[in-house]
Length: 185
Image (cartoon, rainbow, N blue to C red; front, side):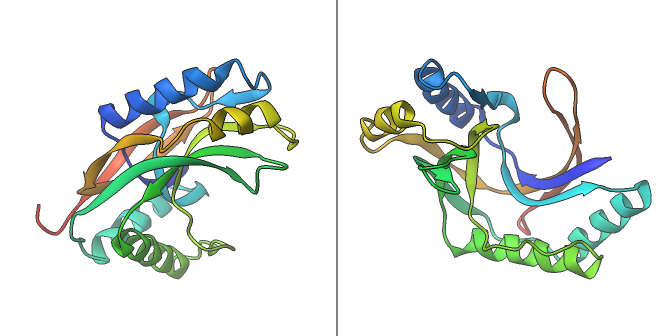
């Protein structure tokens, strides 16, 4: 199965992100907009893994121990790799160092299992849209710059999940395989 490790979002944040997407949808017709119900905060993408690896992954994450809950604010917009030739349009995530520490612990545990380490520093974000061909999006960039202090809500992270991702003609479908709560639960 295709799998990844991520933090799920509360419905209030999803609704706010959906509203932002709607406001930009007609501006960039070549954007492939992420369905709001599948937006998540990725901690580690695993790719295709076997049933045996699913067991190894869940055991390694359980062994890594819990974590203390921490707050996350969803605010701002950005582009990867940059606004001149974007491949991804995203909403920003502001969190204490606890988020980066959690991602690093997960990265370390997965590396022990043979998963390749991420080649770049962890950069938390929520993907709103992707562009098949990276080229300037001046209308979208102008529209984004007109939104002052965009905020989409906040929430407390108290769990993360291993998700299964099934690709279909209608987009990816996600299923939670295993839950990992904070050490307080």
